[in-house]
Amino acid sequence: MTSQDELFMKAAIEEAKKAEAIGEVPIGAVIVKDGEIISTAYNLRETEQRAVAHAELLVIDDACQKLGTWRLSETTLYVTLEPCPMCAGAIVLSRVDRVVYGAKDPKGGCAGTLMNLLQDDRFNHMAEVTSGVLEDECAALLSNFFRGLREKKKQTKTMIL
Image (tube, rainbow, N blue to C red; front, side, top):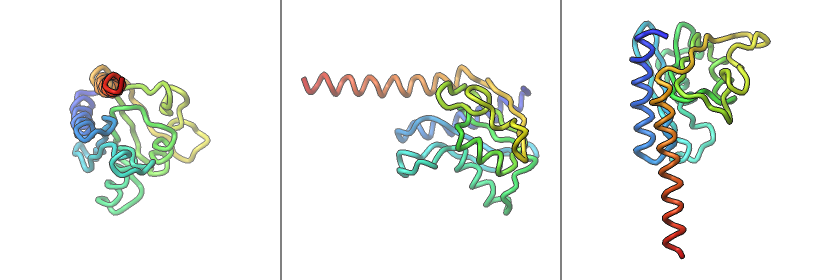
């Protein structure tokens, strides 16, 4: 982990906060090339009602458009939550060199928690993985978000009774 990792993870956290502000699960992502952010995104699954509107897929798609290529070699993807199987697959297929994530995902993490699709040598590409960058801050965003949802649900039940 480098000081740049923390800097760019903070940018991903800012993206996650944008998601939270519109009622989305607070997950944010940025792609960096040559020390500069080239793309940013956050979860839009609920807003767009699209299962594939994960922050990682949106940021990869945007970076490909901006760079004019599907090959994102020499890039690093920063994301606040460990990638799921779908996102890990997109990372491998887009040839991202490195993935840095904040919080582990015990129910869907495929960058080391449940499995590590990013470093499986059966694929034609592997990405370097750095985990736990600003992990507490990333995890707190998610915990607070879901705690708030549970409390709203509880209040709604109370109001009905």
